[in-house]
Image (tube, rainbow, N blue to C red; front, side, top):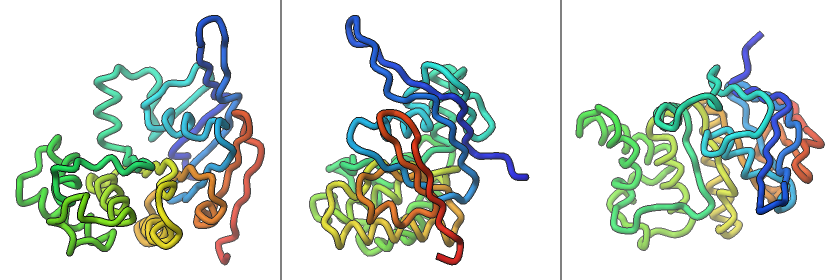
Length: 233
């Protein structure tokens, strides 16, 4: 049996605000396997983004077990965690987070500047990533010259240019119109179906969640439901 890529057992996250303790995640049990496309749904404040940040090593759990890519990331130093994150995690944010003074090419190239790749190799990787999101013809355009959907696809290209182990997408269609959102979701679905990229998508939109093959629901920090779509669906 394949080992899970991500494994959580009894995972809990608590914040302290002055003298008040706020529990955001409660006893999460979750396994994610290579090639899964998972959506996390739930109302605002249900803990979706917190869970995603913990998987990415941006935040740390307060209790419970967590192994990601067979590593106990909770015990890593910040430096080791940054190295691990650069290797394994591709993150797509709601607000694109593109650098306005860089072209689409320059934005996608950014993560590669931390590697030992040559300029020629970096260019090959960037153009491959832009091709996967259908934007090779926009490589020299700046964010202000792109539509919202194109900006988000550039952000996806940036997230996958290092060929990370998995992609985490936090409300990637939240700022987009319906047509642009569908384009972005089709790109994510294609990365999963054609390249077996593991994807975890946080969304409040049932139409976005429908692209995932496994759908989890969070309510008040508790994982309350899971739907698995048959392969033939």
